[in-house]
Image 1: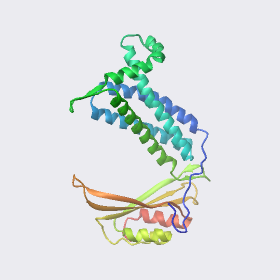
Image 2: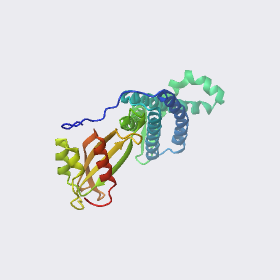
Image 3: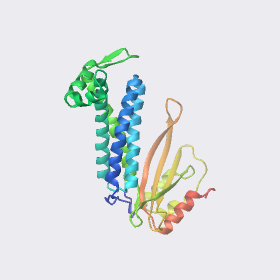
Length: 286
């Protein structure tokens, strides 16, 4: 978000030469994950554990994508998301290939099962959908359309989680001069008034934000100050500010958090970076 008189970080759109090879490695590891995932699904036929495995697969692919983006130095958000989505989609499809392969291997040797896979894949998928599965606690047996619907939800969860994690990395600030990702330092201030911080952000007065006083512990609001900066040079630094308001409690008695990004990756001068890091690293109230 852009505020008055403030420039913000924008990814350059460049990609490193290792981006595509690392995503290829991710796909190779995805083949292994698809086999492990299918074995887990077969060994743990409970809907809650199946959901956990699905979320875990999405998270694993997401972190592999973050690794590929980070070490491949991809600052092209669209390309990073597209590659992550393609690989995640391929891995989900591979889990169904493995499922049919396991089914064929029951009555054939593994070599025969591989040779039959091409001609029997769609028949095998249709047979699985027709046979369906049961949810014991609900005493429900699901077949046909509902099986395909669950598979579609599975696909959306895995691909969606992977893309969200990859987006987080590809949007992270990068120092183009030094060719490296910025380091991050942050601190949560429970004594800074949220309205004061929001007002100064709207005015674009970064220096005044660093001088906001702590007025004591505030149970209902917090301000999180985050500094991304290049560890190699002094010229690249960005400020993000998030406000958190605690309103009421949920069913478990925990405070409900209402978080709002007040500022994202605003460009700082060298002097402002030093003030920001000094404020973040301080151990006493201002």
